[in-house]
Length: 244
Image (cartoon, rainbow, N blue to C red; front, side, top):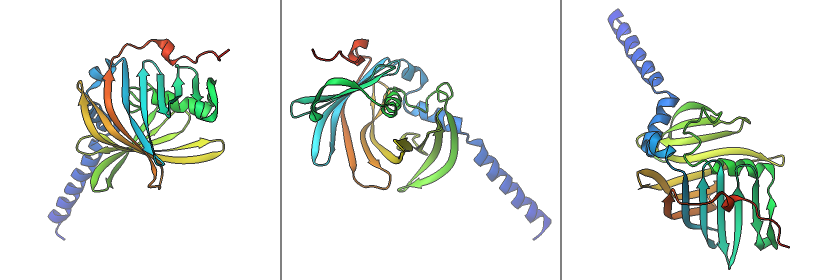
C-alpha cells in the first residue's frame, strides 16, 4: 500500500473514532429531555394522575396512580369491589391489601420503600440524574428488534443498576432493565414502553409491559387518561390510622 493510501486510511479512522466520542451520555440524555417535552415543561409539572387498566394472569383491573412533588405517590387497584392501595408519602411506604384480609394500612419493607420512591419521580430518573446522585454511562448502540437504540447504564447511590434503551432517532425510552436484591434473592426485571402520546406538550408512554427478564409472560398496562397539575392534598398520600 502506498504512503498516501496509509495516510488516507488513518485519517478516515481518526474521523470515525472522533465521531463515536462526540456523542456523550449527556448529549443523549439532553436529547431525551427535549423529546419528552423539555426541562421547563417537565419541571412545571407539580402532580400527575394516570388512569388505566392492567392485565395479567387472566385478570384485568382498573388502576389509578397519582404522583406529586416531592416524592409522593399512590396507586389504587380495584378488584371485585375492593381497593388495594400502595403509597409513599415522601418518607414512609405503606399499603392495604383487603384481598389478604388486611383492611388496615401497614408499613412496607425497605425494599418496597425504595422502589416506590423511584416510582414517585415524575420526570424520570435520567432527568437531572446528577442532582439525584446517580452516575450515567453511555454503553454504546445496540439493535433492539430492528430498532437502533442507545444503551445507558444508570447507577444509583446504593450501587443498583438500571439500563435504559433509548430509540436512536426519537430518543424515547423503549425498554428498561434492572437487577434488584430482595431478601437475599436477585431479581431481574424489564419494562417495555410504547404508544407514546403528547399530553399538554409532555410525551408519555400509554402502553407498558412488566415482566421478569427472559420471560414472555408478565403484566400489561394501558393508560386511558393522563391528567397534569391536578389538585391533590398531601394527606392523600399519608398512611391512615388503624380502624378502631
